[in-house]
Image 1 (cartoon, helix red, strand yellow):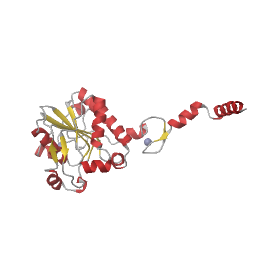
Image 2 (cartoon, helix red, strand yellow):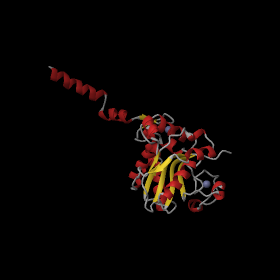
Image 3 (tube, rainbow, N blue to C red):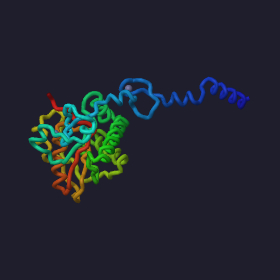
Length: 262
Ligand SMILES: [Zn+2]
Ligand SMILES: [Zn+2]
């Protein structure tokens, strides 16, 4: 009797809830940004992805967004431009790359990635970054580094947050680009308050003794990995220390760069 009921129950379930429909319902989710229904592994829809604020035209030294030049596509792809700040005072790192401008919705996505533990959002932005860097390395627009070094977090911050967002990004880039990560070379030894609210001069003073080299380098080209480059002061401080520690060259890769205040 029980077996009969179970067979009947299964056939009823199959009739009213076909397996494919159940599978589709499980896969169905909503775009993180516009809430439209999507059937894919990425957290945002194709339309929102296309609309992200890509850092199309930027300084090749510090990747600060610059106004678009009216040139042909091929000129644009090969032109190296420098911002006024880099012409006056060239940074110690050779070049940098930021995939996005740190404006909406990238600021919201990165904030949720870091402070609300939405690590899948970090993975999405790292995947787009890896794809773009791969293309640029192949076309000779970016140098291929020997290793990736994530900007370190102080151990107290690491305990509070549970993960270092730059290390997450470095791991994703490492897997996609097949470049090893070295996260033991440099450590953050002083946990200063968040840099975001400070002026450039205050940041420089704040950072002077914040990092300590733990392992010497051996003439490698290293890519410093960060989530957001705001003023470039952290990147410059770390770059100087990595060069002193024996790096041949430092390049800076980040998900996003803060535009200049007009
Ligand atoms: Zn969307
Ligand atoms: Zn610049």
